[in-house]
Image 1: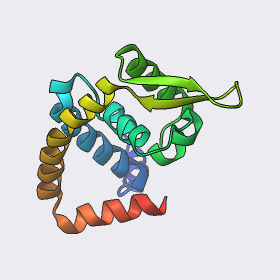
Image 2: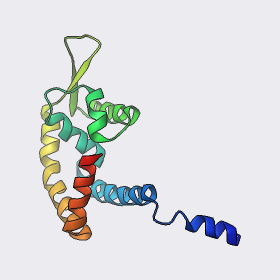
Image 3: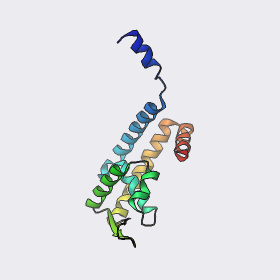
Image 4: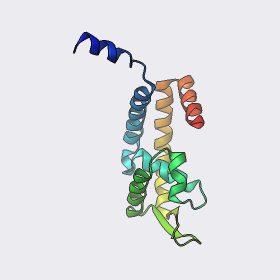
Length: 142
């Protein structure tokens, strides 16, 4: 690496995008480990939470609040359907499919809750309450 390359790279120190990506990966891995006994990933548990908290949502209604793209969302919905945790029903507009948890989906969410509570407490302890609160508030502004 040349001195010029080193100087150029140094100008990117403190990049918010890189820092956020690293933090996201670390936190997501922690929650994925916590949810391992359920056979679900953190994104899938979060999707179950959003479906449970909505009145039969459309998949398209979940991309913005979950902060994921349509392809990732569709892949996760398909996985949850194949596991028997989510089912679809046709809305009044036949082109629209609504999502809802099955009995097994509600049971999976109940099993995930204590695992989430433990992961949440550990993450908050590691990050500290000030940073944890700042992350939550920052995400609400996005």
